[in-house]
Image: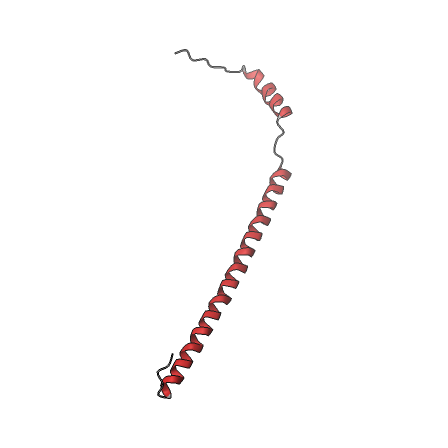
Length: 86
């Protein structure tokens, strides 16, 4: 098997990098900040949604608890009156 290795001459390295950067723009600190800011906004939207979903779920559970407590109270009232409850 033949191995071909291309190694630029040290003086050519800056020219090659310059040619690459002229065709492929460098990411600027402003670009990075913009992406980070959008990511932070996405995270904030996600966690706001999670908070709202959990709050809704908690309210639903409270409703179940209230219903169960009402049924228990009705059954206990029925038992104290000598009824069968239920």
